[in-house]
Image 1 (tube, rainbow, N blue to C red):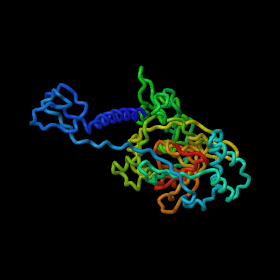
Image 2: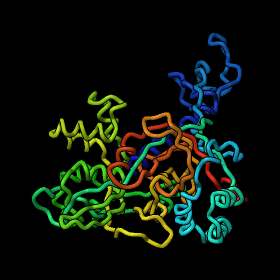
Image 3: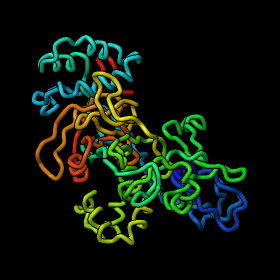
Length: 431
C-alpha cells in the first residue's frame, strides 16, 4: 500500500507537469541566451531573421518556439451504474430466487439499520409466503436494476471463483505439521487512509516502525526469512505449504485437527503488499500456458518442481494473517459459511466478492456469466458480501462456490466473462 502511495505521488507530480505544459500547448524551449522564464507562447511568432523584440521575452535574441502540443491523456473514468429494466436481465424469470433468501437475510442483518435499507429489509422480514411468485414480487417491488459498466463504457468483465478449503493442521509443530498459519503480528500497524488524506479513503495502510520511521511491512519473502520472529503468533501448523498459500488466496478455510475436530480460520489482516498472481508468474516464466494456469495446474507444476515452490510463492508479496473462528451457524436463518467482508456468513453459489468502490457491499446483484470452462449459462441472483485483493475495477467478480474439494475444482477452473446488474432499493440512485 505504501508503494501505491509513492506511485500516487509520482503520478501527481506528472499530472502537475502536464498541466503546466497544457498552459501554452507545451513547454517553451528557452534560447541559450535567455535570462528570463517564458510563461506563455505568442499566438504569432516573429520570423527568426526579423530584427524585432519578442513580445513574451524581450531579452531573447529570438523568440523561443513552442514545440508541437503534446496531447494530455484522458483520466481513467470510474465505473458507473445506469438504470435498466427487469427485462434486460436475461434468465431472471428462470432463477429460483428462494435460494437467494438466506444470503439476502444475511445482508439485511448487517444493513437493516441504514436508512436506504430499512424498507426492503422490513419487507423481507414480513414476507410470509416464500413461494417463487411471492419472492419474485418482493424483489421486483422493493428494488430497481442498474447495469454496471466499466469506465470505458463496456459491459463485460472477468468472473473468477473461490471457495473454502479444508486443511490438515495441528496446534503444535511436529511430524508432518511444519507450515505455519499466522495470526496478526504485534508489530503490524494499520491505519485508515482517510485519517491521512481524503483521497486515500478507500485505502487501509499497513506498516511497521523502524527506529523513528514508519516503513512498509515485510513482504512474503521477508516474512519467510524472519519466520522465527513470528512463531509466537502461529495459530496452527499445517501439513502442506501450498495449502497455506491457497488458504491465503481464498481468505478463509476449515482446519481439521489430528483428533478429527474442526475449526475455521478467517481473514484477520494483510501485510499491505499488492496481490500478484502466481499463475501469471508461471505463464511469464514459460512454465505454463495461460489455459493451464488454474489452481489445479499450479498444484501439478508444484508437485513436479518441489525445489522451486518457495520461489513461485515469493512472486506474490502479499501475505494474509488469520483469526480462529467457530464452525456452525451464526444465527437462525443465516447461511453456515465463512465470514465475508460484510461481516456476515456467506452462502455457497449465492455470494460474490466485488470491488466495493463499484458495487455497494450487501447489495443483490444479477450475474450473467457461464460455468467454468464452459459456454453453459450461469445466471442467478447473488449478494455482494465479500471483497478480495485481486478483485478490482468495475465489472469484476469472484464467485463463491462453497466448501470442499468439489467447490475447489469449480473455483480453480473459473475464468469467465460476465455482466452484472446491481439491485438498489427503490428510490436510491447511484452516487
